[in-house]
Image 1 (cartoon, rainbow, N blue to C red):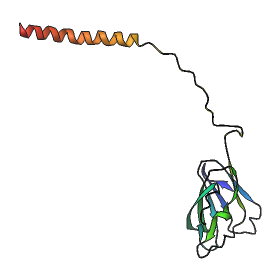
Image 2 (tube, rainbow, N blue to C red):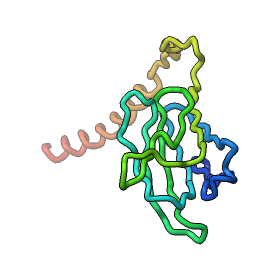
Image 3 (cartoon, rainbow, N blue to C red):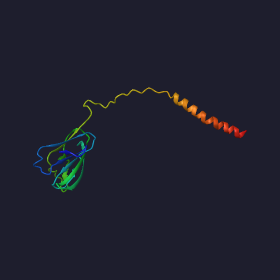
Length: 157
Protein backbone atom coordinates (compact mmCIF):
# COMPACT_ATOMS: atom_id res chain seq x y z
CA UNK A 1 0.00 0.00 0.00
CA UNK A 2 1.39 3.39 -0.93
CA UNK A 3 0.01 6.84 -0.29
CA UNK A 4 -0.60 9.03 -3.35
CA UNK A 5 -1.85 12.06 -1.43
CA UNK A 6 -2.88 12.97 2.08
CA UNK A 7 -6.36 11.50 1.59
CA UNK A 8 -5.98 8.79 -1.09
CA UNK A 9 -4.38 5.39 -0.71
CA UNK A 10 -3.86 2.80 -3.42
CA UNK A 11 -4.68 -0.79 -2.50
CA UNK A 12 -4.06 -3.49 -5.10
CA UNK A 13 -6.63 -6.25 -4.77
CA UNK A 14 -6.57 -7.37 -8.41
CA UNK A 15 -5.17 -10.73 -7.29
CA UNK A 16 -7.28 -12.00 -4.36
CA UNK A 17 -4.78 -14.73 -3.49
CA UNK A 18 -2.10 -12.11 -2.80
CA UNK A 19 -4.47 -9.94 -0.79
CA UNK A 20 -5.21 -12.48 1.92
CA UNK A 21 -3.76 -10.17 4.54
CA UNK A 22 -6.29 -7.53 5.52
CA UNK A 23 -5.41 -4.04 4.36
CA UNK A 24 -6.76 -1.16 6.41
CA UNK A 25 -7.36 2.55 5.93
CA UNK A 26 -7.66 4.85 8.92
CA UNK A 27 -9.92 7.91 8.77
CA UNK A 28 -11.32 10.43 11.24
CA UNK A 29 -15.04 10.98 11.79
CA UNK A 30 -16.45 13.51 9.31
CA UNK A 31 -13.36 13.68 7.08
CA UNK A 32 -13.64 12.29 3.54
CA UNK A 33 -10.99 9.79 2.49
CA UNK A 34 -10.59 7.75 -0.64
CA UNK A 35 -8.97 4.49 -1.61
CA UNK A 36 -8.05 3.34 -5.10
CA UNK A 37 -8.78 -0.34 -5.57
CA UNK A 38 -7.84 -2.53 -8.51
CA UNK A 39 -10.54 -5.14 -9.25
CA UNK A 40 -11.00 -7.17 -12.43
CA UNK A 41 -14.33 -8.81 -11.59
CA UNK A 42 -17.80 -7.70 -12.67
CA UNK A 43 -18.56 -3.97 -12.52
CA UNK A 44 -19.05 -2.72 -8.96
CA UNK A 45 -21.72 -0.35 -7.66
CA UNK A 46 -22.51 0.95 -4.20
CA UNK A 47 -24.98 -1.28 -2.39
CA UNK A 48 -28.25 0.11 -1.08
CA UNK A 49 -27.35 2.50 1.71
CA UNK A 50 -27.87 1.43 5.30
CA UNK A 51 -28.90 4.46 7.35
CA UNK A 52 -27.41 3.01 10.53
CA UNK A 53 -24.11 1.96 8.95
CA UNK A 54 -22.08 4.97 10.09
CA UNK A 55 -20.24 5.10 6.76
CA UNK A 56 -21.24 6.84 3.52
CA UNK A 57 -19.61 5.37 0.41
CA UNK A 58 -19.32 6.76 -3.11
CA UNK A 59 -17.69 4.92 -6.00
CA UNK A 60 -15.83 6.44 -8.97
CA UNK A 61 -14.88 4.22 -11.85
CA UNK A 62 -14.05 1.86 -13.23
CA UNK A 63 -11.03 3.40 -14.90
CA UNK A 64 -8.93 1.40 -17.34
CA UNK A 65 -5.24 1.19 -16.38
CA UNK A 66 -2.35 -0.96 -17.54
CA UNK A 67 -2.99 -3.24 -14.57
CA UNK A 68 -6.72 -3.63 -15.21
CA UNK A 69 -9.77 -1.85 -13.83
CA UNK A 70 -9.32 0.60 -10.97
CA UNK A 71 -12.05 2.07 -8.77
CA UNK A 72 -11.79 5.03 -6.44
CA UNK A 73 -13.87 4.52 -3.32
CA UNK A 74 -14.70 7.72 -1.41
CA UNK A 75 -16.07 7.42 2.10
CA UNK A 76 -16.99 9.52 5.13
CA UNK A 77 -17.48 7.97 8.54
CA UNK A 78 -20.12 9.35 10.88
CA UNK A 79 -19.56 6.84 13.70
CA UNK A 80 -16.30 5.42 15.01
CA UNK A 81 -15.79 1.75 14.21
CA UNK A 82 -14.35 -0.77 11.78
CA UNK A 83 -16.09 -1.36 8.44
CA UNK A 84 -15.46 -3.75 5.55
CA UNK A 85 -15.48 -2.19 2.07
CA UNK A 86 -16.99 -5.33 0.53
CA UNK A 87 -20.11 -4.87 2.71
CA UNK A 88 -20.89 -1.63 0.85
CA UNK A 89 -20.33 -2.82 -2.74
CA UNK A 90 -22.34 -5.13 -5.02
CA UNK A 91 -22.07 -6.24 -8.63
CA UNK A 92 -24.00 -4.06 -11.08
CA UNK A 93 -25.89 -7.02 -12.58
CA UNK A 94 -27.07 -8.55 -9.28
CA UNK A 95 -27.55 -7.85 -5.58
CA UNK A 96 -24.70 -10.23 -4.79
CA UNK A 97 -22.02 -8.71 -2.58
CA UNK A 98 -18.68 -8.10 -4.25
CA UNK A 99 -16.09 -10.81 -3.67
CA UNK A 100 -13.39 -8.36 -2.69
CA UNK A 101 -10.64 -9.36 -0.31
CA UNK A 102 -10.74 -7.88 3.17
CA UNK A 103 -10.22 -4.12 3.15
CA UNK A 104 -10.99 -2.50 6.49
CA UNK A 105 -11.92 1.11 7.00
CA UNK A 106 -11.17 2.15 10.56
CA UNK A 107 -13.04 5.30 11.52
CA UNK A 108 -11.83 6.94 14.69
CA UNK A 109 -12.76 10.03 16.61
CA UNK A 110 -10.35 12.75 17.66
CA UNK A 111 -12.41 13.65 20.74
CA UNK A 112 -11.83 11.96 24.09
CA UNK A 113 -14.35 9.28 25.12
CA UNK A 114 -15.63 11.31 28.09
CA UNK A 115 -16.31 14.45 26.00
CA UNK A 116 -19.83 15.75 26.70
CA UNK A 117 -19.88 18.66 24.27
CA UNK A 118 -18.93 21.41 26.70
CA UNK A 119 -17.01 24.31 25.30
CA UNK A 120 -13.91 25.81 26.81
CA UNK A 121 -14.44 29.20 28.43
CA UNK A 122 -12.58 32.11 26.91
CA UNK A 123 -11.85 35.22 28.95
CA UNK A 124 -12.89 38.50 27.38
CA UNK A 125 -9.91 40.60 26.34
CA UNK A 126 -9.64 43.92 28.16
CA UNK A 127 -11.48 46.74 26.42
CA UNK A 128 -9.12 49.28 24.91
CA UNK A 129 -10.44 52.79 25.32
CA UNK A 130 -10.62 54.46 21.91
CA UNK A 131 -9.74 57.89 23.35
CA UNK A 132 -6.74 58.40 21.09
CA UNK A 133 -8.79 57.51 18.03
CA UNK A 134 -11.64 59.85 18.99
CA UNK A 135 -9.21 62.68 19.69
CA UNK A 136 -7.50 62.12 16.35
CA UNK A 137 -10.86 62.19 14.52
CA UNK A 138 -11.93 65.43 16.25
CA UNK A 139 -8.62 67.09 15.32
CA UNK A 140 -8.80 65.92 11.69
CA UNK A 141 -12.45 66.99 11.26
CA UNK A 142 -11.65 70.39 12.80
CA UNK A 143 -8.67 70.88 10.49
CA UNK A 144 -10.91 69.98 7.52
CA UNK A 145 -13.94 72.09 8.55
CA UNK A 146 -12.19 75.32 9.67
CA UNK A 147 -10.86 76.20 6.18
CA UNK A 148 -14.21 75.30 4.60
CA UNK A 149 -16.10 77.52 7.04
CA UNK A 150 -13.60 80.35 6.50
CA UNK A 151 -14.01 80.10 2.68
CA UNK A 152 -17.80 79.94 3.00
CA UNK A 153 -17.91 83.05 5.22
CA UNK A 154 -15.63 84.96 2.80
CA UNK A 155 -17.96 84.26 -0.13
CA UNK A 156 -21.07 85.39 1.82
CA UNK A 157 -19.43 88.63 2.93
